[in-house]
Length: 302
Ligand code: NAP
Image (cartoon, rainbow, N blue to C red; front, side):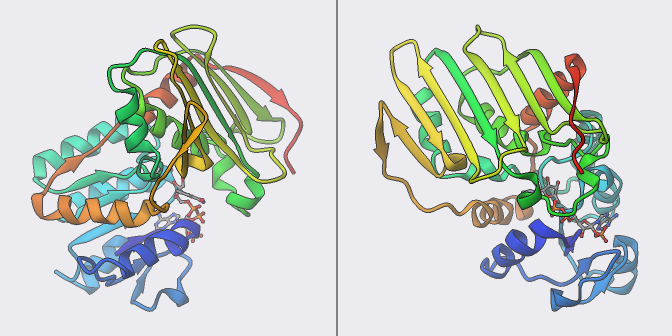
C-alpha cells in the first residue's frame, strides 16, 4: 500500500510499482481520499489493516516527514516491510528508533534516497574512491512553486523548507565522497512570514572551497549541480541532479535517469531478506547544520 497519496506518490511511486512485477498495489491510505488510485482507499493504516487483514506485505510512506514515525512504527509492529520516502523521518532520533524497531521485529526497513540512484552517482563514487577532495561546490536551486505547489507543510518548523530539497544533494554528496562531511557553519534564510528556510548556505570542514548553496527562489530551470576537484587535479561535475557527469570537462556516457524504478528494484531485494537499509548520513548532515545555523530573516514568501 502507498500511504500518503500526494505529488510524489502519484508521479513516481505509482508508476514504479506498476512497472515492477515484484509488487502489486493493493490499497492506498489518504485522509482526503484518492479517487484516481484504482484500489481501495482508507483514511488510516489502522483502518486498512482492519479491513484487509493479511492483505498487504509492504507499505511505501509518502507523507510529509512529521507523521512518518508514528505510521512507520505502526507498520513495523504489524510486521510490514516499510519504504520511507526522503527525508525518512522528522528527526534523527525518530529515524534511530525506527531502525531499532525494525531490527528488533525482524522486518524490512528501507530509507530510500532517490537522488542516490541518479546515473552519475555510482561512477562518481568510483572515481572519487581513494581521492582527496580539495573543492566541493553544491549549487542546488529550484522554484518552490513548481516543485511544491500549494504545500503548506513544507513551511512548518518540521517541514524542512529548502532543506527538503537540499538533502537530495547531501544524499548524493555523502554517497560519492570518500570521507564524511562535517558542517562548520550554516546560514538559514527564513522568510519573515514562514518558519522554514527558503535558502541555506552550508560550509563544510576542509577549507573555504567546501560549501553548499540551496535556494528555492530560482525562477527559470532548476540548477542541481555538484562540482568537485581532487588533490590529484581531477575535476568532476554532476549536473541535472546526477543525470549528467563530466570528468575533466569531458561528458561520460550514462544510462537514462530511472531513480524510482531503481528504488523499487532495491526494495524487491530487501523485503524477502527482511533487511534494514538505512543511510542516516544525509539526515545527520542536515541535523548538524540546523544545530549550529545562524538564522537570517528575508522577504516574506506570499
Ligand atoms: P504532498 O503532495 O503534500 O503529498 C503528501 C501527501 O501525504 C498528501 O496527499 C497528504 O494528504 C498525505 N498525508 C498527510 N498526512 C497523512 C497521514 N497522516 N496519513 C496518510 N497520508 C497523509 O507532498 P509530496 O511532494 O508528495 O512530498 C511527500 C514526501 O515526498 C516528502 O517527504 C518529500 O520530501 C518527498 N519528495 C517530494 C518530491 C517532490 O518533487 N515534490 C520529490 C521527491 C520526494 P492530505 O492532502 O490529505 O493532507
